[in-house]
Amino acid sequence: MDLMERYIQAIDREIEQVRAELSRDTIRLVNIKSTRSESVPGAPFGEGPRAVLDAVLDMSAEEGFHTVDYGVGVISAALKEGQPDLGIWTHGDVVSEGDGWSFEPYNAVEYKGCIVGRGATDNKGQLVSIFHLLRIFRKLNIPLKYNPALYVGSNEETGMKDMICIPGNDDARGFCNVCTPPKLSLVPDGSFPVGYGGKGGMGLSVKSKLPLSSVTLSAGRKESPGKASAILKTTQVPENLPDCEILCHDGGVEIVTQTPPVHSAHPKPGGNMITKLMGVLLDYDLVAKEDRPVLEFIRKVSLDISGALFGLDIQPEGMGPLTLATIGIDTGADGCPELKMNIRYPIGLTFEQVVSQVGNVAEQNGMTIGAANAGTEPYLLDSSWPVIDRLKDIANEITGMDKAAYTLGGGTYAHRLPNALVYGMDGCKPPEDFPQGRGGAHGIDEVVSLDRLQRAMRIYARALLALNDMEW
Image (cartoon, rainbow, N blue to C red; front, side, top):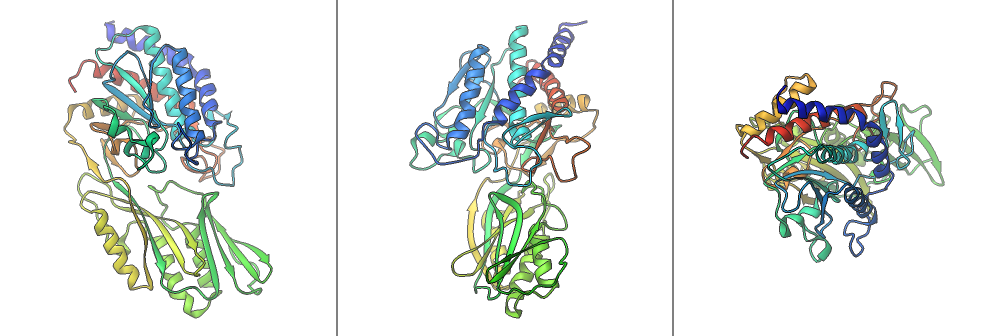
């Protein structure tokens, strides 16, 4: 048995023994409600995300890691002193929990081999698994010619301002503006085998030019991301309307539809809560004739997850197609509904092109651009880079798959860092008794599988050892 095999066997034994600690520490971090909130001194993204950073700093100091707080909402814990060469990037912030949970989102439990709670798989379970893997390398005194570090950010979910800055806020100057990034970065916020590029992300809305006369619409509120409602200016509606809830109010009736919230990068064919609500209003003739065209257009958009309605359904070689997710509706004091979209677009399109083409079609349907917010631009690394192929082979060997390297739809820190690859962890595998639609990232009853985390640790262990013998 050669030295490498002995290292791998010793690491794997330690990974098997660390399961209880994985569970304990993931629960500890999940129980910190770390949604973005008001900026305060020292905590540019709110006290919850800051509390996660502080908890990881405490855990790291206890283990003898070399920690740095960069003062911008980002920390690191490295095996050695000095500038890290390899960064493994996780985040401690989470999206809003929404409603409809069967479990408590911030009182996490271990259930059938999974941790259930908001942020368990996006991204706190991954954070904890990398922490414990580096602890194992330190415990076994495995020599590495480079300096690996766990990085933890606090604003990945709502704009990555921890990387690019909040203008005028000295506590959020942006890591990439004031710090030296690692030579190579891995981001365990996706899937195996390895991602070497990603779509751009943007927010866009279209607003009706005229107010609706018979109904007020609302959908995708922060506290209820999978819910849509229509308040009708009538007290008369048919009984037994399908797949919706009817609530009576003074002077009107509210119709509520709901679907499980999903990640905006992966909208479901067949629409969502907005599609269902428009279907009830239109198919059962519950709205005034003059309101129908705008509602018909909203329904069409909510079904159009490829952007074909706007001529955006392209798929360049080496990258997945554009995706369009309708995520909400707001109706202002003027009575004009505004439909909000999240769009992930591939190389071959620009932010300006998307805005222009959506705007042109909206104008033809009684609507206009309401807001357009640029997010991340698409990126693509050279797929022939030997590091990519080596990481792919390692992941496929452990998972038993035979998958190619890929480009991803979701936005991650890999969009903001040089030489960054998405590397796993595929942590979300809900228990078999979970209803369909529950357990996913950003969803209801979010879970992370401890088996999957331990599998990912084995993959990362082999990757760290392989990188020790490569030039990168």
